[in-house]
Image 1 (cartoon, one colour):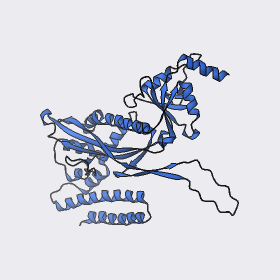
Image 2 (cartoon, one colour):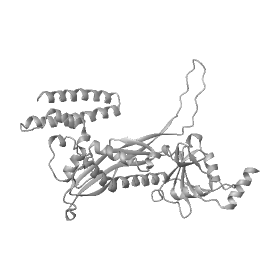
Image 3 (cartoon, rainbow, N blue to C red):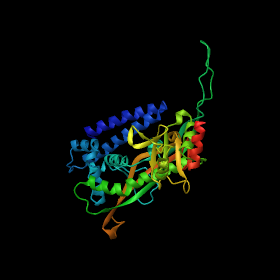
Image 4 (cartoon, rainbow, N blue to C red):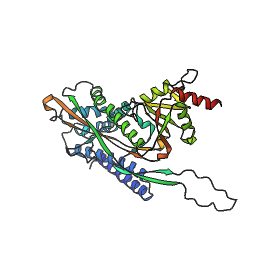
Length: 384
């Protein structure tokens, strides 16, 4: 054991003691963070051990440190080499970590290197994502449970100085189990990957994985929002206004609809021929109704209720759905799958679960355009 290995081993020992202390204190999150640090040190130890045993190794300690600390310099190059079937050196192998995804029956999955994962997530943010409407919880395990508060309508108790404050059964919590579900796509890449690996690989990944991943996530989120919800029919914006006014003020957060629903809302005029939607001053490309921002998604992600009836969610969708996000992405490569096309196959997999929580925090509406008779009737009621 050389000096570097002894230093790494000492760090692992110290962190292990710290992790056990956190476990004794029931601080699971802090313990998990320490375990991640230990895993990284163990990988460093393995590389250092290999270099000690390989007298012909030409990789210096400084190069090891640079590769481990600055993974952005090598993540895309490593995947490109794997696609070409080229052998990785010890430093490159240090950032190729086997995934904990055991659902793959066809070989081994690896975790996407950190710099590639960051680039993918940044590009995903350029697309319209329904994850912004829900409560996103990053997770590192493949299953667990999420807790949320219910019946949060209680008040503080009155008491005199010196008296004991009475105990209360509030707040009440409910628990929902979750299990990560994996979804993926095969990406066919030309065997000639030259020059800028990052630009070329991201072009393929964007076209075949990222856009499809966002659309899939959106559709699953809207399916969960609709599940077990009674559809309330509203006809015209005046009826929608009345429905919004009945919401708990704390839940008046957003209006969500599809392109067809937004078109129907935007076309409706008052008796003076003026549009009833307002421009959002915080985002001029978006419109508002009753001071609530209107989020619009594609019809193929948020489908119509039926012909001429458009979906609208009002309220707090963040309180209604937890999105358990396994932030790590998996990948695998094969030079044989598309052999007849002279292409290499890259498989990218993501994992998440969509969990319904407080279903009373929002409403699911079926919106219909108001006819002339309805508008006149509502206008008469307001002036009466």
